[in-house]
Each structure stands twice: as C-alpha cells, then as structure tokens.
Image 1 (cartoon, helix red, strand yellow):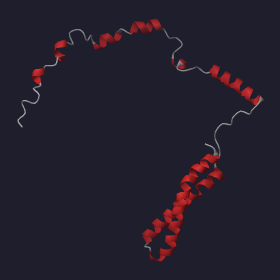
Image 2 (spheres, rainbow, N blue to C red):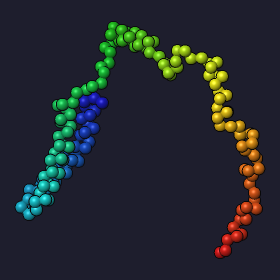
Image 3 (cartoon, one colour):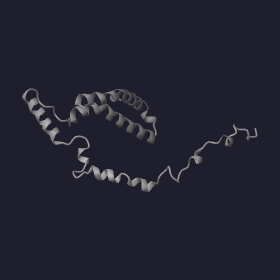
Length: 148
C-alpha cells in the first residue's frame, strides 16, 4: 500500500475521531470542576487516545516508508528486467518438482501398493457380511409403541 493510500485509509477513521475529540474537549472544559478523580482520569485517557487517532494520518505522511520493491524502469531497463525474470523462472523448479526425490522409482512404488491390503484386511471376506447391514422394517413401527 502506498503512502497516500495508507494516509486516506487512516483518514477515514480520523474524521469521526476528530469530531468526537472536539465534543469531548468541549464537555470536559465545561464540567472539569465537577468531575471526580476517576472520571477525570478516564476522560484524559480517552482524549489522548482520540488525539492519537486524529494525528495518525499526518504521522503516516511523515514517518511511513514504502517497503514494496521498486518496478523496473521503462525502456531499456524493462527489457533487461524481463530477461532477468525469465532466467530466474528457468532456474527455479515449477510446482512440486522439488518434492520428488532424484532416485524416485515408479516400479518400487507399484510393488509396495499391495502392502496395505494385508494391514487392513479384505472387506469382502469374513470380516464383513451383507446380512449385518440390512434394514429391517419391523424394528421401526412408525411410533406404534409410544404411549401418548
């Protein structure tokens, strides 16, 4: 985000805070003699916080440093930058190429694929029968057993 965009973003909050600060100071000056100690502390703290919110856009203009990388210059600099970007893209692996080891063997992977069947069992064999999962309508009599 640029300096002016950040300024206007903070300015959106500074406008209502400035209005609130004005009202707070005017009421504080009119009633300062009748405020208790704790209410005086709360009022001064709120005034300082609102003053900081009001001053934030101006602090952004003075202290904000843009950390975004600078764009390449137009003309000859742009052609050199495009060539540099192409060289950088060619040297970096695309996608998940760096996650695949160099000694990867597809035949070894295919041979180890059957090992999972021994660990978890065969579901079409003796561990599972079709009779266990059947729905029996007699078990559910449409609320006939309820005494209402």
